[in-house]
Length: 218
Ligand SMILES: C[S@@+](CC[C@H](N)C(=O)[O-])C[C@H]1O[C@@H](n2cnc3c(N)ncnc32)[C@H](O)[C@@H]1O
Image (cartoon, rainbow, N blue to C red):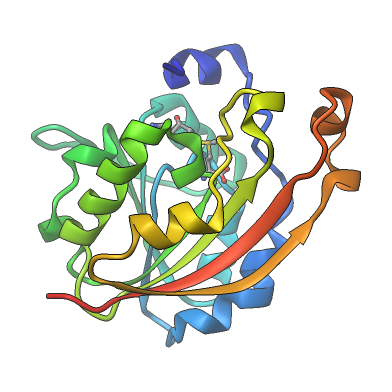
């Protein structure tokens, strides 16, 4: 089991990118957002993608285990915040952004009822297989009907390298979201030439896929 809090303390955050993810920019329209809408970013780290969402005029709600990650996010982006201890989470509130420090599974619908869309980059694929089904079931229970999800995944021969990030193929995505979601794969391509860590480990391919989902159930 990954000790995420320790990884943040040790600065072992190889997934973090200072640049905005190009797939968010390319596919954000599938979320059908209007200015002022709220986007939920699960397992948010200190992602620069949240700054992009704010710059587009959206509000952001994130959840992240590591207090260090949240404080770095606000400090590195020169954003001010107030912190408020809730029952099982601490809410860090900035202008148009609220980051909840604690366990994703402690979030409930009351916090996310205003959310129009979810942006998942390196959240589902950060979790081992047994937690992935739990993650999707919980997502279903905390977001509202018609909420859209932009999901980015990776797939590679898991036998050639261990996770995280874990390999999640299309069959698994379809199966995970089969109850209560519509699911459309928008793109999938092999990007092994741009993944030196995987190349060095002898991994044969790494497919990067983008999905747009919509919660159809109540
Ligand atoms: C691979 S990182 C991705 C971060 C971010 N989505 C990004 O794209 O940079 C996964 C993050 O999830 C956080 N995390 C892991 N399990 C969590 C949980 N149960 N609840 C909240 N955050 C969690 C970790 O601390 C880590 O920052």
